[in-house]
Image (cartoon, rainbow, N blue to C red; front, side, top):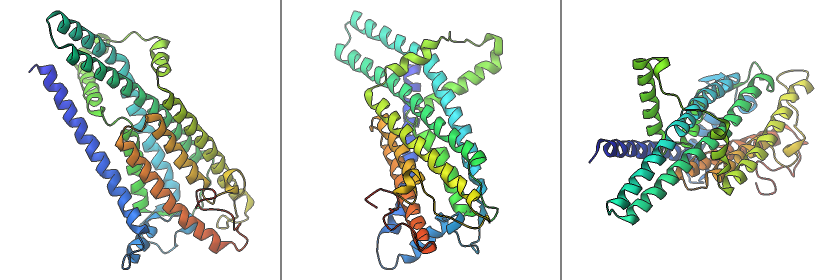
Length: 349
């Protein structure tokens, strides 16, 4: 077996290990939420504990211990922007510099196999596998671009849209879950081949150190290298992008409404009922929009990767759980709260 084949198998094993680890992490994060929903006698303490961890801001009890200021939400998006940008740059550069040479090597090996009497079926399957690999890498670049648009907007909102009360707090457990989410979610968009990308970046850094900046080989860039691969994406990628930006726009509008509520109160500790946009239908439309956003990412991916299904399952379970508690708080706080306003899914729940 050639060294290149050994390295390929090693990268494949590392990729499977990373994928398995991420999937187990999403399952481990989702299962406690699902268990808390099960009406089993004796598990009430578990639900109350989980609610205590999930509460923040107006629905968090003032005497709760192990809390941090709610303005620390910005930390999530600092991490998210930094990490997503690194992944996007690494995968995109890998796609531009390495994939053309991989295709050429695959074509050369296919021709050689024909000339030497090798298996035509094996060569064809290998060629199709390489095409799928190239497509999936560029699809991940596309998904990471969408994720970048999301985390950049959320970072902007924490600075310019939201006006957190100085007394607003969040549980330290919820804070750590947020850091985990914005580390694992972008990685889940490219986890199947992340080890080979990391290996590529490591070799590139070593080459830069040994040879210096002036001697490192550089690909010849042109605008079509950036545009053409995206034009070849399949229909579901663009349908998913439309769904993504539909949720993206409505989440921004709902966050603007929430951010403007402080201007309508005389005291920072007072609260008023939000109206407008999807608030006319549900109590937590920003959560509804978040589900639409990650649903769009799932559709854009083609739905073939279990990791993205598990990511989406966590998003839905977590936000439905939080929206239920928010709905309960609104009904308890306001006697005139609209009775026809659902928690998170219009006309359903």
